[in-house]
Amino acid sequence: MLRCDPVRTPVALFALALLVRAVLFGLHPDAAYPDSYYYVDVARALQSGHGFSVNFVYSFVEVGGRLPPHPMLPIPSNVYWLPLASIVQIPSIWLFGPTPLASTLPFLLIGSLVAPLTWLIARDIGCQSRVALAAGVAVAIPAAATIYAAQPDNFSLYQPLATAALWLAARGLRGHHRSFALAGLIVGLAALSRNDGILLGVPVGLAFIWDRWRAWRSRGSRLPSIRWIDAFACAGLFLAVMAPWYIRQLVVFGDLSPAMASGRVLFIRTYADMNSITSDTSLAAFLGQGIGPLLLSRIGGLVSEITLFSVVCCSVVLVPFVAGGLWARRRSVDFGPYLVYGSLLFVASALVFPIFVTHGTFLHSAVALVPFGFIAGLEGVVLAANWAVRHRRGWTEERAVPMLLIAAVGSLILSAAMFSALALPVWNAERDARIAAGHALDAAGAQPTDLLMTADPAGFEYFTGHGGVVTPSDSLAVVNDVATAYGIRWLVLERADITEQLAPVIESKVRPAWIGEPIFSMPYEGPRTGDPTIDDTPALVIYPVCIASADTRCMPSAIGHSAATTP
Image (cartoon, rainbow, N blue to C red; front, side, top):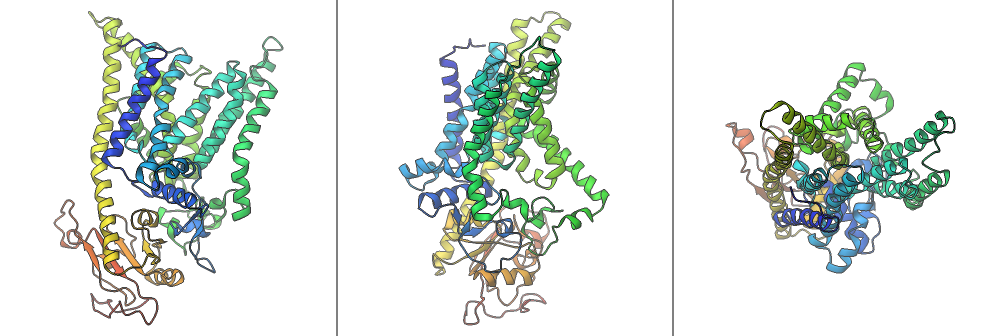
């Protein structure tokens, strides 16, 4: 393998990572899912002088989990999501305007830092130079998670920040005083990127406690590696970063974590409860489901976590090598904070947020496990190669180790290509459909102030400029109540993301009188099932919504038995 140059290697790794992300951006230059839509929408509101606000309700979590007494738009943003992914877009939006490139550029640059950072960490903790180089290349193209690396989302922020925080905490245990103090700053930035970034403070705090316990146990023969002044500086830097945001949350919402206050996040039993304004999300209802469903949901969350990490982050092939490498490093202080954080993340996600595991929450955090995981995995590959050399006649370390390292990194690159090839056409098709929907609304005479009801209000704001409200996971009567309260003018249904209650509407089985004839329908072009009810259901349909009695866009018509009924 190539010899590592201490100057050229990190620059080359950064360039490689940036090239990969630039190619992905070229293949899909827009935001692609609700998280990234939301961050861009908030950034554009900030740049235009509207502050932290959005002209949509992406989830009823943002309005207390219920229909507010006085519904209005816009509303204060960031009840649930953190602000850093929006803040970093502001300089480039000022320079280039509210364009996809302006929103994505910071994430391309910041996310690419993780490749040279991984190389630096591997060298710092004593890995072979070829392991460090292979780890840097692997993180530049991190298996199935690569597809998210060019999105204006916190993947590209949280991964280098969390990795740096864990590394700095470990360096503190080795006597690097400034590193431990700086860890507090990085944890603060990570916590501004993701809600569960606060978990990074646990291994940092435990590192200090363990260091003090180890010094006490030595009965004076070992001095603490982390001084009290370092610990105070660490905590002070964390508070300096987080205090302004905490103050904003208290002033605007009256709570440090307003998303938790309604119980909508902590006590939901199904993901549909997130967007239901009638479901009971109290602690009593949560516990009332019984021990069986509680245990099953937690076990299911843990299984999903292991599966997601194995497939998306390790491409399956690297899993046994990661396990072997971590076992070999189990007593190393360099991996101590990483192992604590990883264990805490798996346990906390399974116990507290199992419903969200399969909806992206865990994956957003799990990318932080990738750099150290790849280092351990590639060290595991070296261990396997050395074992093979001892047991296979004719094998030498000079041939076996590079060959297996290249094979391991190659499998990760192949996984990145395969998952990108699967995801990009889906993202592009959804983008094209939503752009077409925007043109259809313009052709139908929709005004810029017209509000939409959709499954993804942040996405439709991004593509069409129309604000709106998420479709509630409730009865048609409740949907009507929400539409009336917010003055919704158009209902947009997508077969790929539709509530159970609205499925009969897009299937043309039922249509209440307050929903008019479709003004736009995009045929479904996916795989056929042979069932006409499914195959003939359009991919996207736009209906006028008539709340006011004077609105003549919705003429009575009979579609099925319940066509003209009004809930």
